Length: 245
Ligand code: SAH
Image 1 (cartoon, rainbow, N blue to C red):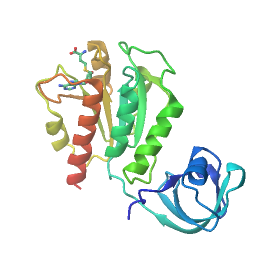
Image 2: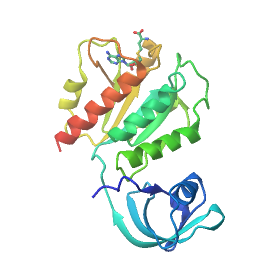
Image 3: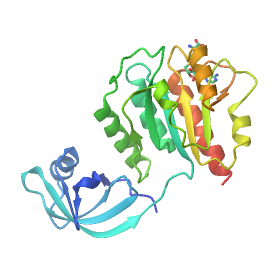
Image 4: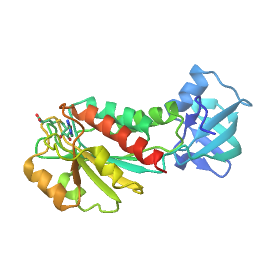
């Protein structure tokens, strides 16, 4: 049974023995907006698949303390662990990708710095991205929180090899579709998908990806924006591989 829609999020570090202590915006929302009182029951999720049914025991000083009454393990996740390596697009687009691809079931986001990314390192607002992922996790009734890594350079990504299938979406490919690649990799579980920036990946970068075992795929004849390509390709991969299971 998925996490209820009105569940609240706690970082796992806030769970000690049978008590959960919230002191952030979530606590403020519960205490001052929803005006929940001691004795009331709420559901808290930790982003690691646990759903805690809790009784509020204290709401003083804007700190919410709740006692865990019961714990459910929930895996509303896809069997496919999809990592999305995304060359950081212009402001706001990256956050849109986080929200939509969290809803779709992406497991991890790796912001990439490539030749043509318009932005410099540390350019993502990591805190904001995490908040967007938490909100999208709750809204989509997931109980696992996707990880948003700190930006890395494309060359560093080539050192990551723990995948069954590595795909790079490239608009200049016309002899291999994503469907064709997926149909030859039905049993893939750990998948990584790379998407380029507004300026695309350079031919040298495509070569580096190929040499590292990435299969270039087309997403069709139309040229998609980075965010459209990321969301579309994630949906295709997750839906196709999940249907095969
Ligand atoms: N600057 C390029 C377009 C880049 S689009 C040009 O002008 O042609 C941004 C990214 O979205 C690309 O790097 C690629 O990863 C992906 N993408 C966009 N359209 C695509 C398509 N039809 N097939 C595969 N990937 C695509």
